[in-house]
Amino acid sequence: MTSSKLPNGTTGYKLTKADFRQINIRNLAAFQAGWNYERMQHSGYLWIMLPQLIKIYGDGTPELKEMAQAECSPFFNTSNFFNTIVTGIDLALQEQDGVASKDAVAGLKTGLMGPLASIGDSIFGSLLPTIFGALAANMAIAGNPLGILIWVIANIFVDWFRCKQTYIAYEQGTKLVTTMSDRLNSITDAACVMGVFMVGALVSTNVGIVFSWTPEIGGVAVDVQNICNMILPKLVPACLVGFVYWMLGKKGMTSTKAIFIVLILAIALGALGIISKG
Image (cartoon, rainbow, N blue to C red; front, top):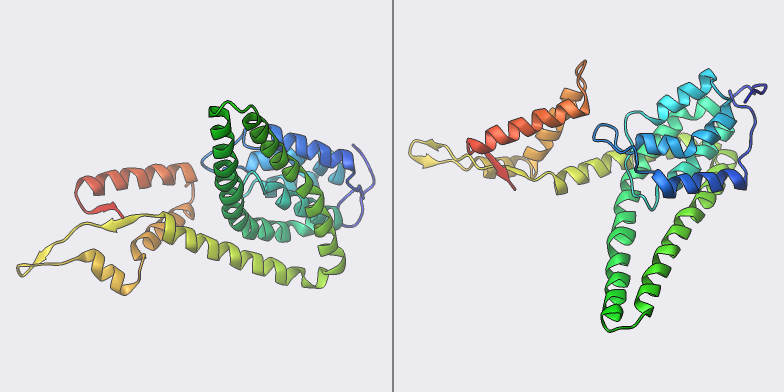
């Protein structure tokens, strides 16, 4: 696609219903297809919106390459049931501000993916399947064919909701950059703070590692883990995450290498009785 460029690096293209339909089809079909341990959903996230980015920036342009690379860095991971909320806002920002929206997009993605993951997975990944799945299974066991129908309808509703939120998020994202542009930096900063807060919460609740080593000093056993708890609860998980963060800052280090290093250290220290699962 070739077109004259506006000052913000875009072609001036405005998304249509056909664009949203394409996004939703791609999202339902293969959003998770490119998942990997290093950048998680980044390739699937870019893939579902790539045709629209080409229309916004033009095919093969430096702006398209810059924003495509930005969408894949550093990583993205959220609930399959809420990911198009981020996509809709993301496209609205880029449609309006072009490459100048790169930092705002990165901040919003970082801030939203954690909260949306916890809410979406809890409601649509656990709560609804438990309620409607149990109801459908019990009715099916009793010989009532409506059990199958209930389960099918529940899943159709979930997929409809996933598609509908794309339009809503895009409309709200457009309002964000047209009527609240003066507050965008504050919103971006708030989203970044929220992202950091969620990382801290995930560290304290999901990284389960404690010291099991109890050396004897002067004939008295020293509870190393208790000392760490008195200094700061969850100090050991925080140190582990800090160590991984430090490694990722080293040249040539990747997430995959860091995972193997942590795995080897965990096996070795666990075998020596120094650490254990908390």
